[in-house]
Image (tube, rainbow over all chains, first blue to last red; front, side, top):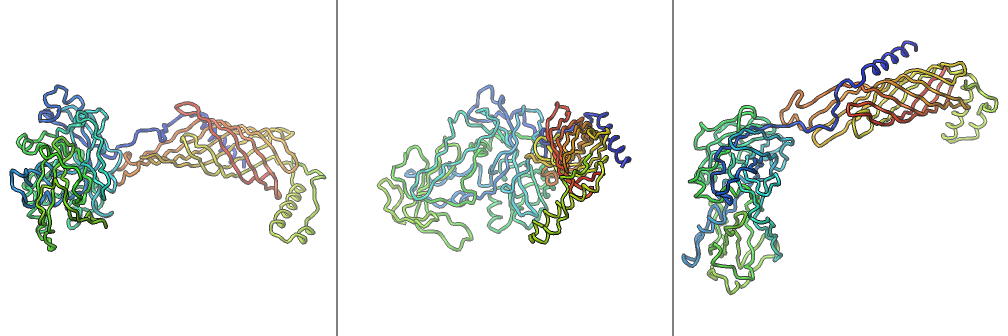
Length: 390
Length: 211
């Protein structure tokens, strides 16, 4: 007993003699980064067109956002547009609708799901984006044993100064005659302006952030998620991938054969660790940008339906403002290889307005179904411009 | 101290046992009977050893409750038995979570104690003052670190710290059988941290052995 007593006394005296040693931090510390990504923005990042073109302070609110990509399928109308039922000049034509309403530059673009980290940056200087959270399961494709997520680094002018890339979306249409959900996007002057991104489209060279869990099974569906066929697999956890891209024509041809398109130039393929790579964001080539003027704006647009489903609606009661819209009368798209054939009938397609934040196509038909029990077969309104016989 | 008094003595409870019948009655009567025998047999408890279940506010971790075990030894220091002194030690642990980290603190409390006490019947009431230190072992694990491929100090950090500490506890010891009894204690604590003094509390429930 005396021995125990002496031991306790000694330890207590030690405690009194060395107070305050060590450093406890508890919960009151900043989160340890899970990943740090080096990013650099080209000096001429703000040289391209945009709503603020010509102003002198285009880079004062320059920021870079890490944006995880969505799994997305384009609607068939944009991939295989049907023929016009009305010739010009009665209608602007289906190609005009595709150009105005389908995603720019093509149907193989990077589609944002959500932004994560966001930092201010100076053109020409290297900065570090810190991730304190892993991508959530809904931005990853694959099962628990093998799944992957991809992100693009987007350089933009934070016009409203809120420190985050603000996403827009096309109008969300409700079914069965309920009013549409119209986005309150604020004044266009306050919309963030995207200057460039490391990953814009699979048809352009890209540098992307990859996060991989488990294996990277080349036979799994995750390989077809923003594919880089022919390039190396992403490393476990975070890595930086580079690819040359492929053409849309090659991609469509490969898709019809149930294959993945091969990258145009396999020498561009790289897989780097975060320490090895600096993701550099350049402004898009001016020739490409003039051909696809809404290419960058679409990087701030999320999609309403990632499944590629077309929502058909009854003709509206009010006559559209014909001179100021892009429209066409067309049949229904035929998907190659679809044995069900082409649905008979017609539709009026109207592209989103040039001033809208996001591109979209509205589909109207006097006889149709919106995938719910309430199908309709109505007499077209007086203003209906399309032929009334199939 | 704790000499049995004549009014505290009771007869053996064999009659009550026979009349009882329920388990609860048996337990109560048995406890009462054995405690009476304990008082008959015990002498002045010069030495007290106890072991306790400890519940306390963590010494350094902001929220939570630290749970563990402790032990102590007290010895009468004066002839009348009013003052005792000794030492105590306890170990308790608490784990808390933030959005990104899991932090576990192990508190090892080491105290030199002085105790003012007074015996009443089978009970001993006291006020115990403890001075010493609390050795804190902190383990902080970053959530999702393994999934992110982190290892080493990026995934987990540990540190030790010795904090000066003081306690004031009220306590009650009740002798139940022979030299054995139970104790309840509790009161405020003070710990010196880098950021200042942190007030807390500690409590214990346990078994005592007095001789």
